Length: 71
Length: 261
Image (cartoon, rainbow over all chains, first blue to last red; front, side, top):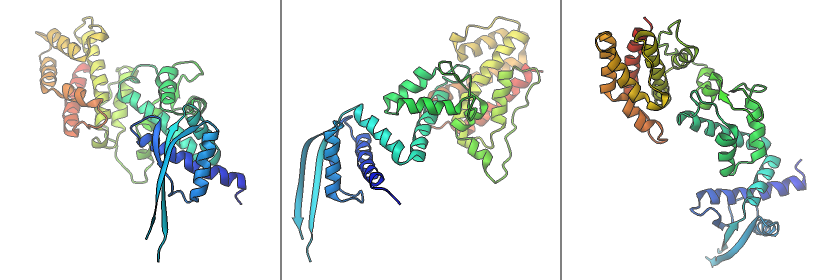
């Protein structure tokens, strides 16, 4: 049985791992463009984790944008 | 039927080294086996680079300069690298000789096989014949014997052409030194002169007294095998043609038999 803390750590790791992958793929050492989604966690939670990483001083969110579309 | 699709992009600046420290601590916490494999792979790749660059052959590895510092620069967690390298030393897998906290290191033959991914070949269930290409002279030095045996222990040439090419250069140097000292009885040029100079010097010294040996050495020099190998051996993306390696091995086998007759 997975505890709440383990679940939170696991989700946070998914996000930081994704940031690191973007970093490796990026031409810039420190600036990356991060796309929300594809982590099997909710978008809200993913954004919440990004904000918490910023609060901890690990990243700075310099810009954010998106688009809503209906079909 | 309609659905709303929301795309969100964030531009992020990563604050180092805090981000990497956090990343590795969390990685270690959520999936230790995977984390361990990741760090171990980093160490292995670094050791492999040292072998292929010629740093390891006959030269001690300085852990601080050759392993810790470059891995740290690539974002690997410093303390875990130190800890895991210890596991490869004399108390652990015995891949490294002379392991101590501050001392120089040297790969054992077992360690070299591991670094070059040759150990898995030996563990395969399909019986494979070793090359056993070179005859090992009884009075050869321990180092020369060891280098020849390592090639003999391989099961095929093609996948390991770069490794063999690299090793052949060291073997040739040792054989030429033996020829100069024991057969021609002349002092060899300093190591800094390089293999090409040592080869030319040996040919000159053979004049008038070691006809067959001289012919073999001239053929090797003119064949340009050594230059071809020099050009590609340190290039990650190029593999030495195994046919060239086979020809060079044939030459060196002949020279070896003349040097230890």
